[in-house]
Image (cartoon, rainbow over all chains, first blue to last red):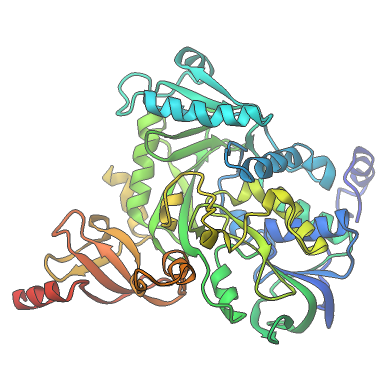
Length: 421
Length: 108
């Protein structure tokens, strides 16, 4: 694989930039691997990359039923932040943000990470108190966080609706180091970097059956033949339950819901930050892509579904929310909208844990927030698979936490997956 | 607003229509989604593990499943709906409570 650097770009200039290598190989599946990660999304590829890089593991395969970047890696709103407050979560997401800050260099691939600040508007004194509490907890743990009063907010983002909003804007909770990244670059970058460390990326390789003994998985039946594995990791958020039942393991504290996202036609620079209308108001988040499109999303569709398409009432709700805080968007045209299927867990937090089977490891339950989590998710999941025990930051992110009564419920919404959006 | 929505309605975006046994067929936006209708709660003095399974663990079916919907902006009945989680096709709708079901049957 040719490294991306100024010299190579210059050199390839003589041949019209046509002689670059493939970004990753397209190998035939081997009969057996030491470690197989099912799911070639951001989390699966990051896991394979860190297994090879941090733990020096060889003979790893990533199985992807479609193509790289065709699943939820291409169905998100690309927001990266670490404004979490519960033990375990804040360390995890802060670690993720730190990995994002150096990810382009680490992967030798420009993931276009842009720390443009994440601005959560608040609309009532109660919401301000809630935001102050959360953001103070973040500061106590060394994460940057600040509250903007109305004047500061107006100076930074002058064109929000400060006049007659149904929920008057009173200020904002801000994380300056947060922002967004380019989703395709990230998944391609991880695939390329993992491949260059010897990981086999097997596309169009759907797992159709799991052959197991009493206590472990022996082999996987796939659309490209049977593959044996010493260790298996599931990283298929959205469809975790399907695979889990294929392995004969029963129920999970997860429901699959769909979340829509929207992209408009490109316009001139309009919004420099990620703006969230979410503390004590509706639920809406918006940013402007580098191409100029407004990228935004709202709530879940509210009913369980595996269909990768959204419903109309949520289109309307999201458009209403957009108009409520940014009336200047009134005449912008929608270019595309889509829905992604996500694992909504019973407490809104993820799973990186061991399972009832000795050689199976679970990475699931990413709810709304899988994109920003992917570097740390890969990091800690690789650590779990390599060292056979969870890192202390993810030690409670397991399936037993519900019975023990130590749910990690950031929002305090209770055991109803659709409420953790 | 209509001008904006018309082209969207013609594509694959769908509104689920639920035949409420009391009110008739309505848009799903009148209803609130409940959850898995196949959950049976154990006895009050059952073990913690049984209660954990009932409250937190779900089959999360990819296909036809029984689920509850509340007709929030209508008659406020809780309904048991059989719906596909892949195509959103609805196979059957009935009132959750058997006594209510008798009343709605008499009505029709």
